[in-house]
Picture 1 (cartoon, rainbow, N blue to C red):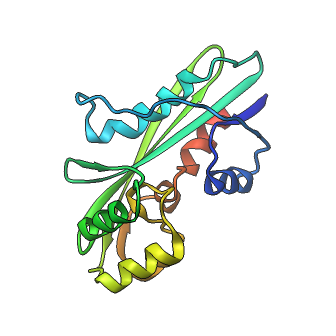
Picture 2 (cartoon, rainbow, N blue to C red; picture 1 turned 90 degrees about the vertical axis):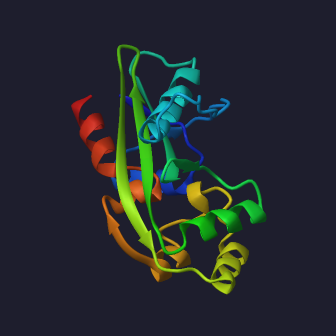
Length: 184
């Protein structure tokens, strides 16, 4: 079995390596648009499967792994910020509240496609403007859903409580990945 990881995320690469898997990284270009009928809890899985379906070169003996993470507060989905202002607004929205982090994964072979989503609740303490500015300027969270990384300063300093997998919040529900890849 040859494992292909369709992600440029250094966090996903690190986690998959730490799980003990060897893999090649492949690039998938697809427009990540969530149709309005998709429910908040289904969005990450939908996007993950959309990426897997966009990969046209799967060969016998290959297994493709895709993933996507979205942050939701109520019915509002937060993807990656477009710029500093967008990041600032997202962090202000999350300040002092509990939100959900959904990470969907898709494992695809020539014979089957398996998509699963894991969710974790995250509660932030209040974030003041100086803390938000410090985080944006020093950590540049523009490649992260919801404008933050749990493994960085903001996660360490301002997450009050979480319920769910740390790795789901980081962007790859390692327990699901391991279970599915082990079965295949």
